[in-house]
Length: 389
Image (tube, rainbow, N blue to C red; front, side, top):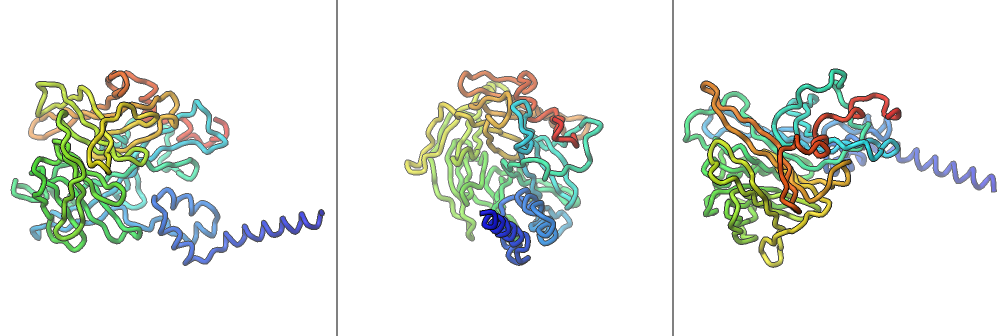
């Protein structure tokens, strides 16, 4: 019996050794099929041989978009990742809240922490906050992605420039190897606009009768909604083809698309009456779920344990039970005040909370338990001795 047990141990140890000695080409194939950069990070941290075989980045973090007029006004498409950081299982306690952040890496190897609901980098971090974060020390869940168009040199002048895009939303589809992609965005005219590799100009899509409000890449397809709630899918063919998915839902002032628990939702925002232009303040929300069989939006009375996040350039969702002190069935949202200081335009974005059950709402600062999901950063996120927490 003792000999058999020893033999079994030897077999197990041998199996573990084989895993660490996977052929590099096979390991690379596995890495190429991972969905997120953080999955790749976990794979590289398994053992030293895997760390040596798998490169730290398999896909570029940004793509250059060619200009349309031969000038130097090139753009690039950069990606930001919204993640939830948690302590490893042995150290996770009910009082240790998860931390929601957005990671921006425009320059390879150099990342910035950004407020997940805005485009502003975190300021006034604790004095002992590290300049480098080892994400392998935490449990990392990717909640969403956002893509942002940036001008590489100078912003073109003139209203006729077709690259003068609305800044609210850009979405992107990419193949598993990251070498091919299609970009869908909203043109300044309110029309949808698409760019694909090999294109020399934007393809403006004129088939939407009303101004587009939002778009999303969901279940392998582009979806777009106009300000009446009319929803379509957009093919990446040449020319792009729109297919009606759901008819209009009249009522609110702005429609937003968000994926939640595998379903496509539409949030209808009602703004305070009489406030237009420079400032739009949310007064209430309605939520609808897409019934793909009936081709219609169905109003949702409760989100259950889900939390929806409507940020400036992306939407995403999370499970409330993963954040201590938070309850589900609520919406984090932003509203922006635009003002002019001298000859420059400025914007000030604030975050609010809306409870779908009772309609209560207010600034994030009035809800401390919900606020600490974003700020301040939990001590364990910048403490070396995790085991001592």
